[in-house]
Length: 100
Image (cartoon, rainbow, N blue to C red; front, side, top):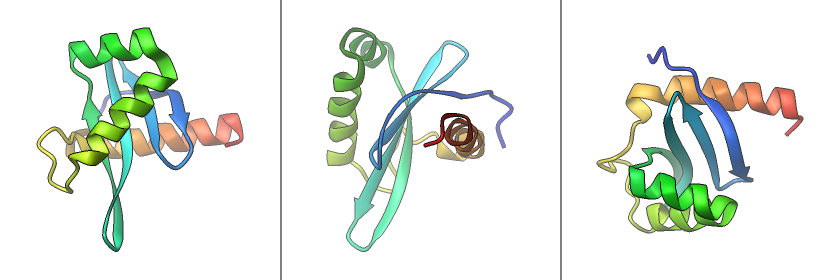
């Protein structure tokens, strides 16, 4: 379980959520493999953060596509084990507050 506090910054329905915790940003990407779906929580590296800062929503779309193209349930950058519960809570809170 993570003690980190996450907040949703942006999203694309059924595709991804951009979240922030402190100074770190994460992209929670919805992926599919044959008959099952899963999500990957990727901590953005400095280059990816710069791309998102500069390109906004479109940059998140492009990054999510790249992640999906290389996705597997055991992706080496997946941070879901460490932060999955906190991210799920943040998304649920955001949905309730925003009406999404």
